[in-house]
Length: 479
Image 1 (cartoon, rainbow, N blue to C red):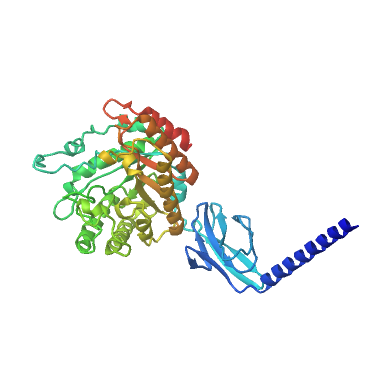
Image 2: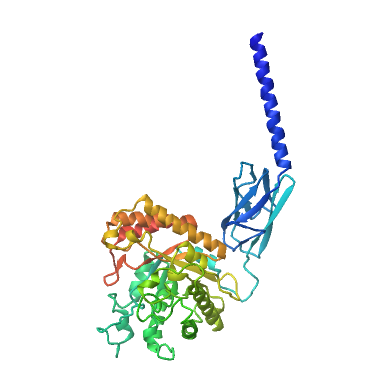
């Protein structure tokens, strides 16, 4: 009997405890006083998506239990429909949208907590209604990229110094001065046949321009010949403004507001000439604004300026000059996909946060590229600081690059890819470099993007693939 009384007493206490907890929880829910929706620390009432499939995180802070719902879940979904009060904790809702091949669309996210309610309008860009725009969007174009190759040290060769007398030099003399052979159709065919369906043809222009900024006709013709070789294969091609920027004594294009008024005139004239030459080419040809632009044409320029520096303003203005000059030439350039990149083509948080999308009279035809030789001491030969083995720390550093790039790409509403990447120190063990190639290719697939390896891999003179295991690792893991 005594045992039964103890059991009944315990049951009663448990029931009372549950009632108290329930009442306390109801009171807490009903009397909630705070609820905020935010992204990157700022309160928001709207969330914008580009037309590509992507996701964004929305933070929810409330001192009451909350639940979330969408007005339409046919193309937009959320991964978390409810949250609970746990001190000052913050819960998150992942908002995901499908690829949009139609008109712009909108949906409302409603979050309720007790008597409080917040709404978030989710807008996704559409394809537009311009009947003249027959070019695939930048997102659709990126989806068609498999893997790319940089035809480096070729048309970008920029020999200078006492040993180099430019007098009487032909375009081929320049093309072969950095150790690569004259480009042939056979070279391009071999690269494309291996599976690379995107070839970047870097071009340095200043040695072939007169004092008025006019490009030498023979040089422009040679650039056109090489582009035509790529076009013949059906691959995509990117041409750019290469070592006119960077840490070179002859680099005239800088992220510098003091030099901008002068360089802007020359830069717009250059792109007007390039765009006019290639105006009638189809959508497989893309233009890239410039390469690894720095504040100064010295090694000091590799140290990125602090946030808010005028250097970033100079880049924004040059990007606008680029878009305006190209679009003004008409023809297929009206809708051609254009590529912009940040300071030094870098990928730090500050550098990425400082890039903005230039105004363009046509939507969905801009892309962003960055360069990643990360970890630097593994991908490059850096003497006593070399990293000889591809470790978990290397993976973590690469993860950070992808996370920063994709987040910024989503914020800007334009797709992004790696314009250059690679473990290019051939003195390191090839098995370790294969581990790098495998991991980066897997990340490309995971994040829905791609990159262009910086030269190497093939001996262009003999058309022999000298680093076959790396090539195999790339293609086995990106597809």
